[in-house]
Each structure stands twice: as C-alpha cells, then as structure tokens.
Amino acid sequence: MPQPQTNELTVDWIRRWWRQPDHYDWLSDYLESQGQQRPIRIFLAVTLAVLGAIPVLIELGRPGPPDVLAVIVMITATGLCLAMAAMWLRRWPTRTQSRVFAIGSALCVGAACLAEPDPQAGLIGCSIFAAIAGLVAFTHTSPYLALICGIAVATVTGCAAKIAMLGDPLGGVSKAIIVLVGIVTVPGVGQIMVQMLGTGAVQSDVDALTGLHNRRGFYRGAAEQITRARSYRSSRVGVVLVDIDDFKRINDTEGHAAGDRVLIAVAATLRRVAGKSAVTARVGGEEFLIATAVGGSSLRALAERVRAEVDHLPQGVTISVGAACTPSATDGDIRTLLDQLVELADEAMYSAKRAGGNRIDYRELDAPPPPKPAPPPAAPPRSAGTRPG
Image 1: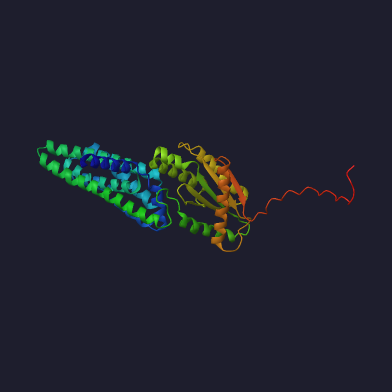
Image 2 (image 1 turned 90 degrees about the vertical axis):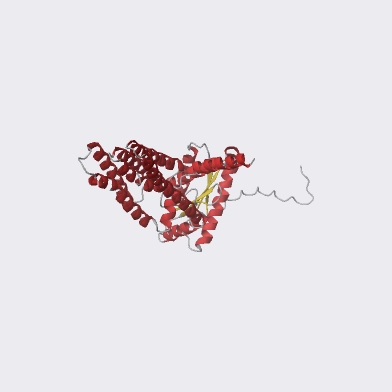
C-alpha cells in the first residue's frame, strides 16, 4: 500500500524541482551584497580556462598525425571556454549571456570529445561537463541543467561505445560510470549550495524568490537614498507601493507555482522600469516598494510606467499603485520619514484599488489639506414680533 504514496511523493518532488524559478538574479544580487561576486568570478574564470585547455593538451599529446577535424573541433571548444572565462573575469554576465555560453560550451565540448580518435581521451575530456553542469546548477533552472546533463550523457555514452567496439566493453562501461558520477555530483552539490544560500538570503537583505531587496534591505537602501538626496537641497524623495490585483485568485485557481511566476515577472518589470539608481523591494506576499530621489511629476510618471508595463505582461495581471513624495529632502529622522512615505503610499494604493485597480494614486507628504467648502451664508436674524408677509 505505501508504494503508490511513495511514487506520488517522488513525482511531486520531480515536478517541484523541474518548475523551480530561475535564481540567477537574486543569487547575483545576494553575492554582490556579500562582496563575493569578484572572488567567484575569478574562480570560475580560472576553472573554465584550465578545463578549456584540456582538449588542446590531449590533442597535442596524441601520437601520430593530427586529425584535422578533431583539431578544428577541439580548438573551437577551447576557444569558447576561454571566451567564457574572459567574460567572467571581466564582469558578472547577464542571465542570457550565461545561458548561451553554457549551452554553447557543452555542445562544443561534446563535439570535441566525440571527434577525438582516442575514445579514452574523449572520456577524459568529458570531465569538463562537470564544471559546466555545476555552473548551470548554481545559477539557472532545472530544464537548462537537464539539457547540459543530456548532452553530457550522450557524449559519455558515445565515447564508451567506441571503447566497447575496440574490444573492451567492461572497461568502457566502468570508465563511463566514473565520469558520469563526477558529472552528476558537481551540479548536485551546486544545487544544495544554492538552497543554503537562499536561506541565508532570506535572512539578509535579499528576497530569495525575486532577487529584489526584502523589507530590511529596502529600509537600508532607501535611507541611503535620502542621505544622498539631502546633499542636494532641491532633491525630493518618493516611494511607490505596488500591489498585485486579485493575487489570491491566481494562487487558488492556478497554484502557488503560477503565483511565484507572476511575482518573478512583476519583480523583473519593476527592476527594469525603476532602474539601478532606485531601491526596489518585495516587502509582502504580493506587495512591492520602490524608493527613489525624484520630483513629484517624475514619481507620478514612474508609477504610471510601472502600471502600464505590468499591464502588458503575458501573465495577464494588473496592479494598483500608490505613490507618495516629500516636498523636499527634509531634515529629521530618516526612519520616521520613510515610515510616513510608506504609510501615505499605502493609503494611495488602497484608494486606487477601491477605484477598481489597474490605476495609480499620487499623494504629497505634508501637503496642505484641500480647502473645505465655505458654509452657506447665514440668514439675517428676524426681529422679534415680526411676521412673514
């Protein structure tokens, strides 16, 4: 009887592993916040450069006349690995660049190993897949990892089949198993490390799901915004609060995985629209905050751009946006000022939501209240003893 339940749990685990969101952005931000991007970049660059040189070294050490096709393929593989190493050494790559280089390197390494006339040397070259798969496991989603591992398994199987055809089937199988264990172990450790870092990110200033700041990170970054704004007396500080309309319905009808994808898409949009100079954070289940040093009209325009960009997302969601701005970068306690701005932006957001959602509401902190309508003029007093005519 417990067998069906075990199978169901296994399928559920595989489904969750396959659908886990991309962690490239939050991992990049987390490593940067901890000052670890540079040493990791150097480590990856050196590792890729060393591993990328393996195919050429194997070819140079092979006796006999060189195989022209093998040399071309191996030089291409080495060149791509070295280019990827140079990219990591120079700067932290974008998510797309990282994906393209990882897949391209895997394809070139696979071609180089299969083109190698000596299949045992080809199997040794397959060890490069461990580094590529580990990098993908550390930075990207499970489908990309499955693609890299698929290329690796196909290459290892091809090299092992060549060894078997040369009269050593058991040797081919045993060597293939040794190489495959290394290829599988490295990305497995990488994914465990990502999970551990994710726990640390939640406890620091980064939201692990979206890669944005969390509430603590928002207040720290927004305080720095106000401090800088106060050095320019004409600067103003604004806060934009975003709430996804009818988000509970998404979780209830489509599942939490779909809700996570919506949160990630909205977070990426806010990050792009607000720009690097702003502080963008996820501070609640479906609530986001942006703090920036801008004027009132610019803040209103930013809020409208955020609303419009989210409205065009393929996920088909809308947001209610509240914006609040100071008349100037006023003196006083920074935390108190931020609390006032967030509270006022929250009131504006709820006003936009009550009006139907998918709209913005803008407020000024310490703005004078609107004038009350003048009371009607009082009727002149009537004299005692008089009667209306």
